[in-house]
Image (cartoon, rainbow, N blue to C red; front, side, top):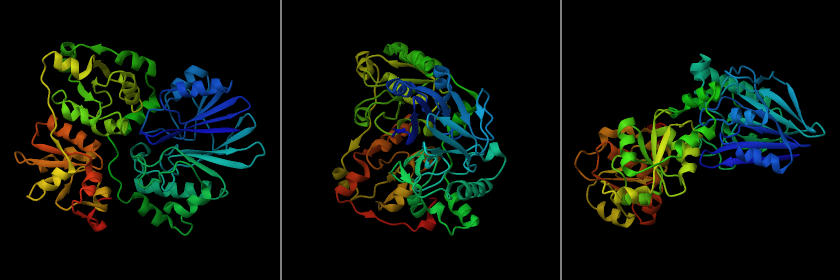
Length: 470
């Protein structure tokens, strides 16, 4: 028996490769399927099944492409209704994989088709569960994403999730291994642990949602409390996963088109395309195309694109470091952004050589920022409210990047203000968005809150939780 977790950090997503006797099952694959094909080839094995735990909202699954490439059967749990051929399994249905058995445990609540797959070894012993978004490490799946499709409230879905956990998962033995679909950083839950694998017994001790003495009413209250609106791209990804999508090779072939500066500018103007700069934030600060948006590849790139660019069909033109064009297109396609029209050939250097205008972001060190704070200056913290509540600069206002557009009226029209995040990545995204909206009187604090604390700037360590929307 061979189980491999294929974890993608920028999406906080875990796909799984299971092999026995030359037969392979893939659970929740990413859209680019080459790694699974290559892995099976190394094992001289054939991919037999592709198991989907539910219709994913935060990424586009590779199930359709993988099935086309291998002939493998796509399996969903009960209540699934995609617009393509799949095997919709019954609750408790079993599938053989070499010497192993995979059993369907229908666990609705996150979505109505949500399913956990129980893996049994060659001796029939329960070995592991692949819990999708039903059970995370330290948390459970949010119950608000499927309420429109299921025509039930989030409270009703939470109650259904409570029953699923207590009738299907908690009765399993403590030594059963838990392999979730996501880890810390995913927007599919609220309080996930940084670990990506654990035992069910430890989760029964550590996970608030699995308390043995917890009533359904308590569960519903705790699971639904403080849910922030989901990213705008979530329902669009669900639609693609249910209805189908282009082969990723076609998306890459269309997008891997280099434009001269003049052509790049013309295409951007004619299509209304977003100019997306994916270089490092320091390079963006030094120089960039006016009104371009920064979201760097060296960060949680795809989720931030999904959170900040409303429509997956939005045309996009890329500014990348040389050789990073295909990576950017691939990572955009993971969250359904298939509209890359091309990239600036030669990068910003070619743009400058063509005599075209550039812009920059003023950035200062935390030490210099400390001197500025001796006066009464406006400070804006673009971290999450939970981060802000833990500790923040005493005079700072919280304007989370996820909802920056809701806070535009708070930024001064003429007075210079300062913006920071935790380490410098999110604040540069915020700076680019603000500048694209004509707000240029900003200064970025390089290194973010980590550098601020190191510089000895006074911070407030606690805000009463009752004042926060956690």
